[in-house]
Image (cartoon, rainbow over all chains, first blue to last red; front, side, top):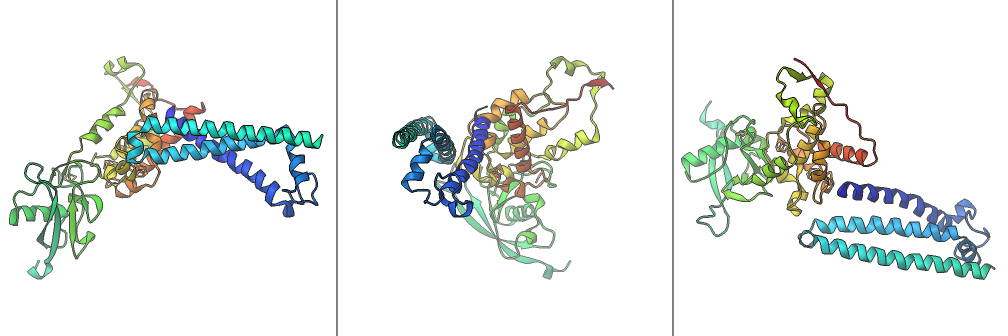
Length: 128
Length: 256
Ligand code: SF4
Ligand code: SF4
Ligand code: FES
């Protein structure tokens, strides 16, 4: 189920993005509305060092951002591929284009995941 | 009717004979138009009064055979089914259907559509092929079961939807609205058991999910088939199948 599976996961990733991005926005930008939900010290801003390191102290944080990254990359790159495949250039280079997008996607995913993991490791070291 | 009911309308017609012309060009003819005249009538007048070499395809003159699809003032329509004065009282431009090669003048080569139509296996498929030999039996179908696919079975293969589809214009491999709508016509038919056979054809690159649901195909369809709707319903069946929720109750054989 090539196209069907691709479309299904594209939509699923889009729905996941709504939830993950919504959570990120709520914690990071709506602290005045929520009273600082998700932040260790509601009196401080979400981007203040204490709050950042407290959030990063949890491995769930890494997991959350890795899932966020995976959903965003899949949704964005699959959509880009779909658009490019409809151009003459894309139609002529279908396999190469797919390979480049897969390599770029995995590369960015590994890079972003490593950054999320080291952020958590660093936060744990600081909080300890 | 008196002569005053006629009016002269310029017809700008796409002309191209691959055997003699390096590139296409347009020619303008004045057509004496009377209320009730179709674009097909206008073309006949041009052929008899101005240029006998003008070529187009037609047969039934009544919107049934699907031969006379062409681009009339920028929109894919049947020439026999379109009254000139309904399109314009000022000027008419006629060209062959886009997204198809041109054989000559207003005659498109529809073969790519017929090939793709055949590719989706537009016939009733039964798991037990020997059923077709049992001439004393029939498949019963309720009015509701008939209604489920009837609209989609009105397709006359005129190619207007294929000409209007923006995905067809950018992706030469795209299956296109006519074949995709017919895939759903059989999926919606309670007598058909061919989903598994059609699935890989619909699921390939440039297949079912390359449709963006812009619905231009449905806007131009002269028979009210609504290919865009059929395609979205077919997508639903494919997704339900992917997640294991597709259900279909098929008619069995009964004594006639
Ligand atoms: S779906 Fe409509 S427009 Fe398309 S080929 Fe059939 S009759 Fe013509
Ligand atoms: S709805 Fe789909 S098939 Fe119809 S014109 Fe748009 S892209 Fe083409
Ligand atoms: S001539 Fe048959 S549909 Fe127009």
